[in-house]
Image (cartoon, rainbow, N blue to C red; front, top):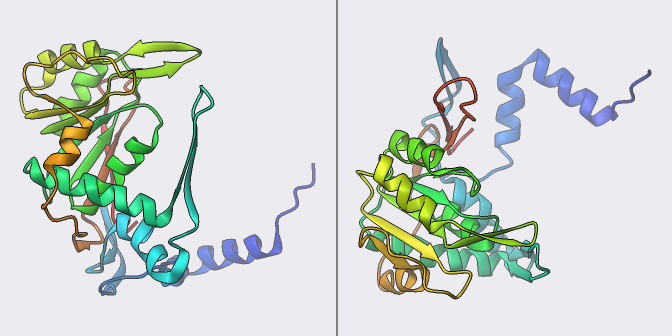
Length: 261
């Protein structure tokens, strides 16, 4: 069967094949950098580094630059839940919420290089948490809110997380699935480094406490008042977040995504 490729895509493929470094340097020029790179690619098998020496912040690129360029009033996040709840956030509103979470994370003592686990359903607060973590130079490890306690424990332990951000329930196929029992069991198995558990109370019911380490999401945000929320300037190859492989054939392996690639 004949395959039709857009001429623009064909040109990109040709340019990327002929001179990969020039192609990606041109693409990277579309983004703001606090400092430009000294080398596009440092390939030293088995490791490699992109945009060596460049300074940026992944969350800044996702939010601040759009607000600064006059798109603060444009829709950035449109959420429609399984139950029909609709929530729309502009870039400016998302940035405001992300700054609140960033300040709260600072209040818990987290900063550059610290790791936390996010065990939440697909909801705006999970997005705010991801962006806030990256904003302050910390590293998040998102775990699917359907994994059992053993899988969650492995990822909490392997990532060295100091904080777990969770929700009390996830809505799936018309059912409320409680998560805090899973979180509690996971912490018993692999949460020796976890200092705080922050719980987004979606069901409006009292979520069970986890070893005295848990606090409500609203109390968490309140705790951040007066703390800094500015973005950290990160080197291009500093880690931004971790994704764990499925672990179907062995223990899950942690894959690191950096700020600049």
